[in-house]
Amino acid sequence: MKSLIPLIFLSLNAVAQIHLNSPLPEILTDEVKVIDEDIIGWSISLDGQWLSEEMIIPLRGVSENEQVHEGEENALGLDNISELRIYPTIFGQDTLYILVKLSKSGFYEYSATEQKWTSTQTAYYYVFDAKETKKLKNDEATAHTAKIKLRDYGSIEDIKSKRLVSHLKQNLVIKPKTEQLLVVHLKFDVENNDKVYFQLSSQHNIFSEIEGITKDLTLNGKSLYRSPTLLNYLHYEYDKEAFFVFFNLD
Image (cartoon, rainbow, N blue to C red; front, side, top):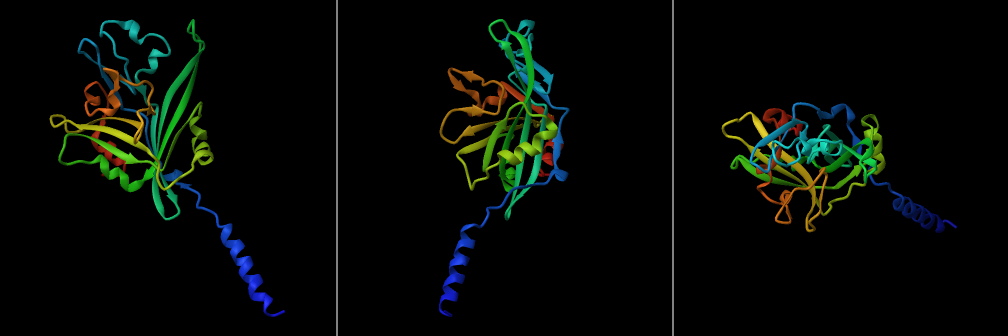
């Protein structure tokens, strides 16, 4: 009978090992950083005029044609930002960031006649190792493209800001790596050194889909979001120092 005791113990121990839980992300809500103002969106019109609007990249058209910007859907622009948030997050032994872009969206209930517009909000979220933010700095170039490796990503439709963290916890599935990248186009103006010009999107490492934006911009049938010249056509403008503080690069 005594000889059976070690066998029983070993069996129970093996079962216990099988049921080890993976870590859950701990979102540090008290340390969240938020940008919800002072972002200026720019786009160059078809007749070569730069147009700007707060928190919105205007649609491209002829600069004197106001119809380009009329209507609820056109008011969303090529892209828009309600808020940018970054949540430091602990996942096991890893320190991660969750970058959230809150963006206005909506739809016409009767699309054919453009009637009954319903406004909503979409949250695009990107999860990556905190050390990846170092790619945003490049002392040798005034313009560069940072490609940040994502460990999870996605979007949450029709989200209220106060419910964001709860929804993130319900959706996050953090992996060692994914095939998706957070692509950040950046430009630092030598003559206006206190500003940074940027745009961000989610892109597959191989396939051509562009996500996390309101509308794609193409030239000769190809997305400019995969081109280093993107910022020559559209970008956001923000305070350079505040931008680096937001990403903890100060």
